[in-house]
Image (cartoon, rainbow, N blue to C red):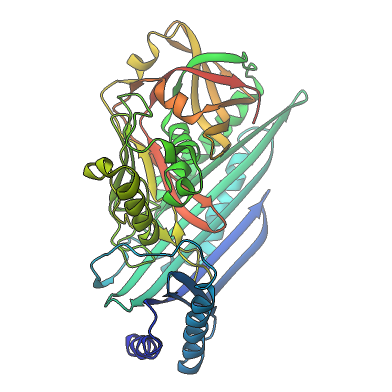
Length: 475
């Protein structure tokens, strides 16, 4: 493969683009879907193709192909260059790439059990066991859907600056969605697991523990009270902290969205959160769902500190937006360059060879501090403890809403009765300012993020306490 890509790169550079990259991706997927003990789908598939991106006179051109041979690759390369050259007459803001050291490397996934070594029958039987376990947990549980996928990615990357990287990654993922009914009340629950360590998700979270978690979550909702709407103090568990950090703040910290007008563009270098809040996006955590060694521009993944002790000190960048922000700060606020991070962070990711890389989160979290859970709740006379989320959304102006599927009242410093059909909302930066306690525990939770493309991510943190947050009905 390398010989072929070097030949195509030599051909492409003969047309004098400012920059050229070729990314070949092979993706093998096994997917299974089961509903109420019935196998709805079970498939094994693969896709193989190339994405080629060229930069000419400050404009991008991109082409892709599912056929890989010398003639097709030459045509696709010429198409990308011609497209960039044509677009260069129309773009108003010319693209410049931040400098990075070109890497040459071969990376193999470190996994405990290769999903390819596990039979389809074993995978299906495990999901059936999970379905049956949840359905038989209690007669009030009416429906269970489980989805499973394992994905193996092999990628080859070469560019005109001298980089050549071969990289292999493996993802194993499952999602469980279930409902229960009693006396006109419907409860719903979801749980998602995933790892990059191979087929070990059922060891990390055994079927029996998931059955108990889902069953108890559903039954607690059926007997739960409804929330008292209003503004209350609250403790957020790591899963809710994660989705809040990802949805409400993380997208505001992606440099392309910030540049497009997100509230963060006006807050660079300013205090936007409590002194207790440090927010990080890190692609280097072993085994985490958003980790990898190199992004899809060949840039090494690194730890990116976005908020440090309450101050916005960095964003997530690809090469293009690292250069854009560096140029902007030089022109408008050169004093910020002393501490505001504007180097590529390794956040450029593409869903497949059909897509151009864009800025995506990886593993995004709030860092832990030093309080125990008991210390976080002990001074709350009445408030809420949010354990697990149902869904969330946020806007570039900083407003957000997150649905909560498992929550409890806090009464006089103790956990009280469960609460159902609850949501939280507010302004992200205002809420971050209200953080007055951060726990010493820490966990990450896997997920998938949509931004025109799907990316595997994780998010999380410790338990945190906020002095006030808007509590309402179901999101």
